[in-house]
Image (tube, rainbow, N blue to C red; front, top):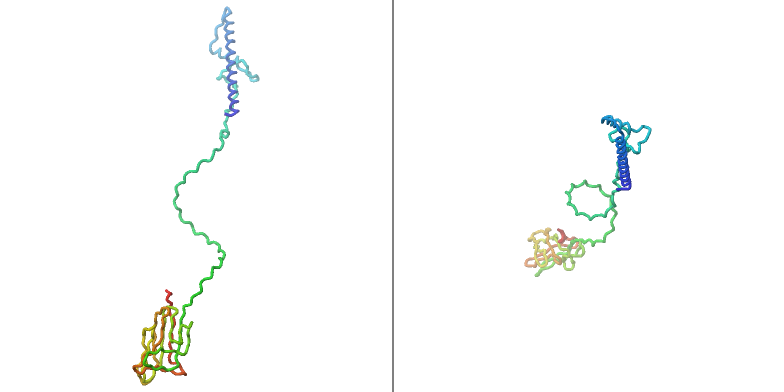
Length: 281
């Protein structure tokens, strides 16, 4: 309770003590009047109740322009101005009862996860980023090529042993994979190759040659004895590994065997090239 409330309570106590004093001071006065009436010889007849109430009412009714007598007692039911002025009921300000702010409490437990929401709309395309730095240089591109084409201008006759056909004219010899001295193609790039052999037969003589892979006879080029010479050819594809050899061999002379050519023209040719590298899918 504030200081204002304590003051109001003290005022109520003083008013109550003042009213009690008025009542106690009136009691001896009434007793003295009764004693005076008893001393006379003839007592007047007591007025009735209504007359006595009217007399008391007129006797103690205050004038409009005079204040309340200090020694009179009024009834609460009498009309007129109230003896005590109305006092407003004190209002308590709740805000003054608010205490100081307390300490912060401990953090509570984490609640359950809510349901997953629906996917939002796709955002706008962001701005183009800056150009990145140049990367390290890559490995040198490996070229997988192999090709050759050679010819012979001289005729060749069989003997009692096998002969390797040696070529004297070089048309194409990429990276030198065909050896002009041995008459053989050496494989340095493994893969699938195409080979072609073209010769001119000799009239009245047989033509009998083999295309060899290492020491293996792969295909034959053959022409029977005839009255006139013709062009004869043979071709094939081979899968080669590194260091394999491909060459042309003239069969030995059980019968007269020969191929024709001359210095002015080239009648005998041997060609080959890489079709697919071995590492390609």
